[in-house]
Length: 278
Image 1 (cartoon, one colour):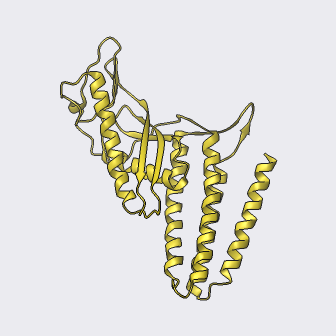
Image 2 (cartoon, rainbow, N blue to C red):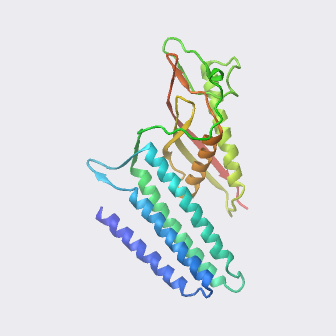
Image 3 (spheres, helix red, strand yellow):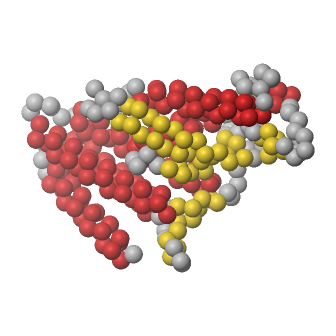
């Protein structure tokens, strides 16, 4: 634990030193303000991560939180990282590519160093994270299907998996309907992620895989649990999280059924992203 704390302190000092050096190169007042705001937001992200990475050392090192608190963590990360990206754009756009090449290169070096450090903090938390189910939050804005659309009957303790109107009433077996539903939700993720990916510019093709764990509650609504397998990148995990939220807000599912009662059920959904390079 001592080594970990010393590493954090050393990293903070290194980044701060680079930031001070770069701040002295910026001439215009707006540039200096943008740089100050950027460093403030980076510090806020670090504080947020450290606040949510408290260790309890018993037999093993474990970070524990509920699904509700983990959702709050990702929601906060999403908002503050969006603000960080906007400040980065302002910094670069406020410089002249021809006259300020040295400064732009220096800024990019600082951005890369910050990305590396934030990613280390993020992945450290994921490595030791254990999420418990505290309560299930239902999204506010869902166009719910009428109850009769989702009326299904199970016999002899049979579990009917969640489904969607696209897969229901097609004469499918329970297994076929389960496969249809899983293909449907993968397609939903693929469609939303494609919109985000289309805005990315990469020099090399990137092949990423991730596993997202969530619950479909007894009302047919989605609730985020955690990333049981990360992409290895805060940036791309947040992209998947935003896609999840989009589906959560705009899609209603028929809940799982057991003994003719609606029940909540876990899902582990593997997602693969192939992002072509230029």
